[in-house]
Image 1 (cartoon, one colour):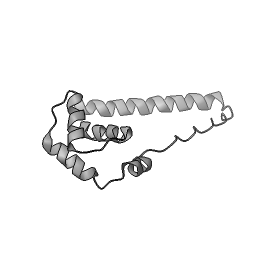
Image 2: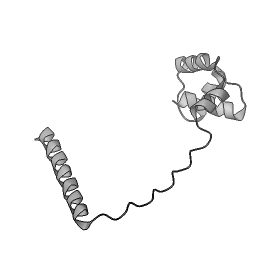
Image 3: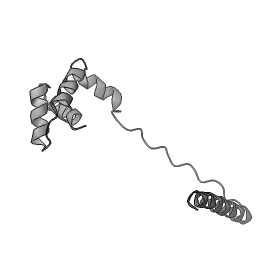
Length: 103
């Protein structure tokens, strides 16, 4: 992964992406460069337009969060209590199923 990061950094800086520059950048980061990986990376990205690849892979802006939904009308207290009990029962069943895996 460090080789890809090196290529992206070189691209961002407007430097040529070749075996020498990638190797130098990886070594500057304190990693012993693997010649085969450097050659493979340079060969693989030689035909790729990095700017287009970045634009297609990363959205320019994150979508705005959806507006909070209006709160539902208050339900009767009995319904809330029943719902809470049903949720508790489901949780207990799930936990008992998990315990059977380890027991």
